[in-house]
Image (cartoon, rainbow, N blue to C red; front, top):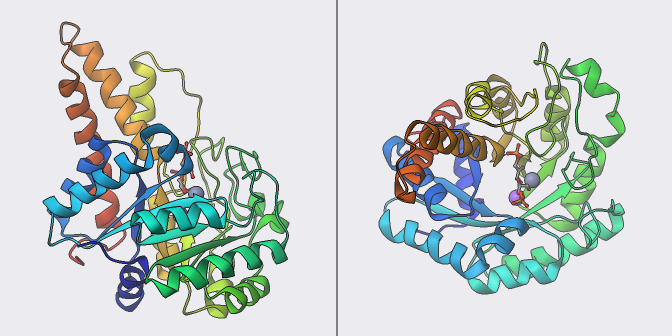
Length: 328
Ligand code: G3H
Ligand code: 13P
Ligand code: NA
Ligand code: ZN
């Protein structure tokens, strides 16, 4: 069934596990996530970004997720709108049936320029008032997450806490987090703790901690009843990176957030873990490999099936590592 995010994250907090929130854009991604969830008996969060809404169109996205709900009536599923840039966008999603929305007021409506705390608190509270009246959950964001759009916080050197300290001011401030939650009543809060969006997070293999676990602990202590969300949580699988480049790709050397560190974050209050890049890489690698090895094939179902299988394996691995398996 379709459930709110609050329901799933409350259960995750009570039982000490984390939920991967996978970005979705097409049929095969949604099927991959659902096959993995069915196999591991995991609850599901699927989210559509602004880019996904532009690519697929909101009705297609929504109906594909509804098809997943119909196909798997026993699995709880959240339909979440990722990174809403304005209350209007969030209200549109609620109206069309999303059970959870993210009001990203950390940036202004252009989704580029950093916004003031006051602006962020005001628009987030506005969305919470409407959403809670109809049982929809709200995720807010506070702090400067590295993003592809702004380039902020990107290309951290991967040498752990020392490296991350250099942009300490970009991290979420625990006192501000407490003030923000009090002012808005958000169900979940995306925090900046050393991650950034996209494939190019760290230029060197992580040798120490890339996540600021100390900061996660401080924030969790201040807002124990608000679920912490980690964006930019892809691990950038090195095996898929190799396959992509082996079969004609030219991706640069890059590293993501080690799964063990995410697991450590979950121990300290992280409940929702946003993953997009990892499924993109698995999909691209599998398609490049399939087409290179099967040069006579021209039926798209063949290479889409290869992509689906590759994505499913990543989903199974994350559901299992995050303790989500068996919790549906
Ligand atoms: O929020 C970031 C996600 O990776 C979505 O990216 O806007 O290209 O779909 P996108
Ligand atoms: P990645 O780019 O690390 O997969 O993060 C996705 C994300 O945070 C979507 O909101
Ligand atoms: Na989100
Ligand atoms: Zn994000």
